[in-house]
Image (cartoon, rainbow, N blue to C red; front, top):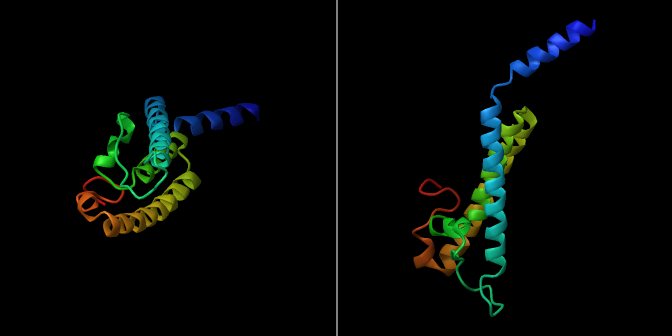
Length: 136
């Protein structure tokens, strides 16, 4: 009985869609996206030292914030990257479904924020995408 359980476990482990290399790369991508999300949120919190939030978000010296040059909402871009890499890392259907739903929700939030930026800061915002560079 125990032999059949261990052989079934080995079959399940071997049947994973991705190997160790893909999981390692997904873990690295996850950590990079989480770091990017952190630095974007820090940049958003400290946009203007005068305390006013009436300036358009811009990149800082930190390379993680350079995504501001391409998109209006890089925090959502990094969050989507985190969820996609977490899905690849865990290789489970529930995480994939949750990630899919989170991408939809964050794209709605990004569109809403991008429209607000277009109203307030038209020249700066019109050259940028909402969440995904060049595409969306």
